[in-house]
Amino acid sequence: MDAKDLRAKFVEIYGDGGDIREYFAPGRVNLIGEHTDYNGGHVFPCALTIGTYGVARKREDDKIHFFSANLEDCEVVEVSLSDLSYQKRYSWANYPLGVVWAFDGKGKKMTQGFDMAIRGNIPNGSGLSSSASLEVLTGTILRDLYGFADLSMTDLALIGQYSENNFNGCNCGIMDQFAVAMGKKDCAIFLDTSDLSYEYAKIALPDAKIVITNSKVKHSLVDGQYNKRREECAEALAQLQTVVDIQSLGELDNEGFEKYKDVITDEECKKRARHAVAENQRTIEAVAALKDNDVEKFGKLMNASHVSLRDDYKVSCEEIDILVDLAWSIDGVVGSRITGGGFGGCTVSIVKNDAVDAFMEKVGAGYKEKTGIDAEFYVVDIGDGARRTV
Image (cartoon, rainbow, N blue to C red):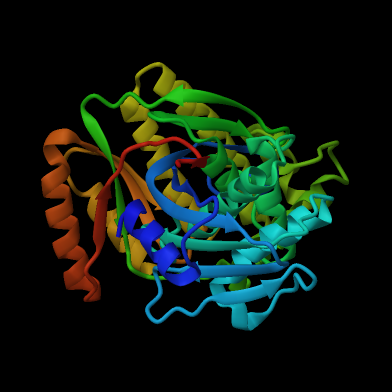
């Protein structure tokens, strides 16, 4: 189903006529800088050309209608502007509804409802930010339909994060929504999450491709492990603050952490903090390496990132580790690591052009042999951020 088909489906469900508009918000992959965004560190994500398509139109009454073309036998979810409350029965529609709720709470009042239909080609649970894509898509739709022109794309990212934190209960950082909102073709975003300052870095890989491998192991960050990591980092920070004047773990470098680490009494919290500090430093080094056209160093830092996420942050899993180990064993793989929140999802690898086919063949066969699961591979292009298309 393409954008034209989604528009046809919209008309089939809601009827023709009126000002029907079309939108797109990408997914994202993070090249390095994982679990640093809520620790005041740096991240380095890029928007993808896969994402979430939306069609929408204002209504005359106060009803909101959500429909997903991804779900078989999907029924339209109806909500009233007078009751923007989370309801388990709304399922996936709680993500766009949360954005409406956040707009309302920030004084962006709507007296007329809207009809909305979506279709995404981001695999659910893959760690490529299908939820952030849907949130920023909804924000883009609301800003356009209701004329909230004073809201910037950064504002939409922050509203998306706020809604996921406070409406849907996942205490995520800003990275996903920011990358979806602010993506730029052929560039990654070097973002300092402590103050949202950023720069675009051209991803020039003339001899290599970015390959995402989907483990097909789905995760749900709302189930608690993601929030638990945040709590552990907060505990470590609070103890560090008794001996050093910092507002976030991202303010420490590796030397500073080694100097003060023993004040952290819980060993698991100490490991979480070690990752947050070291990963931030790796991200800064990696972007510098890319600017120097040192792709090999970038790859080594990706590998080190995975080891840290596996051993100190403990957000990997057996299937992901198998994928990464297989990738590391193949000539032509510059670097490979888990990407996203963890507990399943995808790996991201930089693979030399002449090794891409062998990479997919060998990793696919090895993974199938060890797990019985058929992995999926995406050789990705870097695209622009969320936007109205028609």
